[in-house]
Length: 377
Image (cartoon, rainbow, N blue to C red; front, side, top):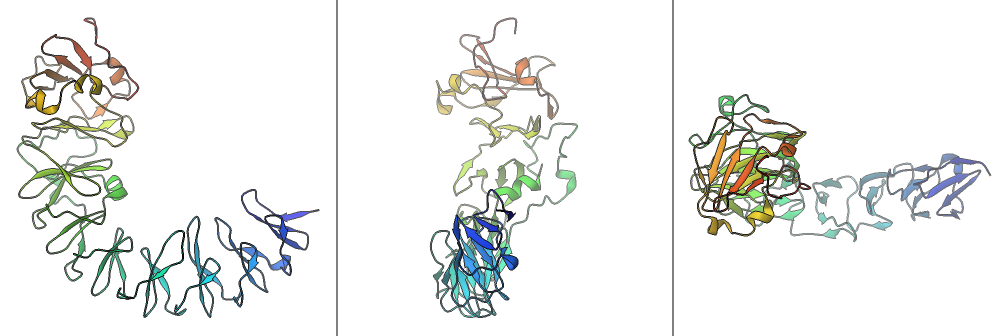
């Protein structure tokens, strides 16, 4: 047999005059006009006579006007001139002419459906159907605001807007690889923004009274005075008139206790890796995990037991940042923001146990040993 159309990932095959789905011939299918409609998982197809879902003809479907509207790995929504389909089922009450998908919701001129991945869309008559995309994963109608199709009960659409990541004056912004360290101990202005990383998961919005992060209402944020200060990979530093903090992805915050010192590193090879320090601890702004202190050694004490973390005078010109708490001293020798690929192997940044005077490397790379350094090192 001559296979004229085939793919190792496609369940449909055209073999001579036959169309086959998962090894079973589709009776009546026209091989000459047969086409697969979806890129993946290849459930929808048609010929000049019929439309097929998983090799079964859809009753009364019109192949000349049939088109896909929305597909996922397990689902699909399609329509023809007469009706709207979810998989092989009809979506009840749908008006073909006005039916559309809008940010995780389906709607026509009278109805809204919630989209699910493993069950049929659910009619949601309590939603206003005139929903428009606002930005990120937010959308709104005249009366309601949604995040990924979920209603935000507190949000007010008349004052709702997306929070854009901008820094005001460029004089307050550090470049990607600045020649000098950016210190914000005295001037808490916008330091460094990398739009690519922020857009990855920082879906922020606000209305007159509330601030929203990834659809979560952050009631602790003062909306009028909120601003971003710093970003690196997926972590950002922010402040309002009351607090300096790290917003957590799904609500809550890590409150910073000034003075805040840093960042002292901005780049580790091809990754953005940054370190700040306040009175409580060090903060690695790196979700990839390319940098850490000697966690095993530090776990012997809590941040409270170690006491206040404070900046001290560097002991010599090779040390550019120095800190201590009640248990350790911390010395960072790197002066610029381009951290050498082999710097962690050189073990040039160290923490010293004040009681025993044993030195430990400050690690850049999770596989390295936190064994004590010898006097030679």
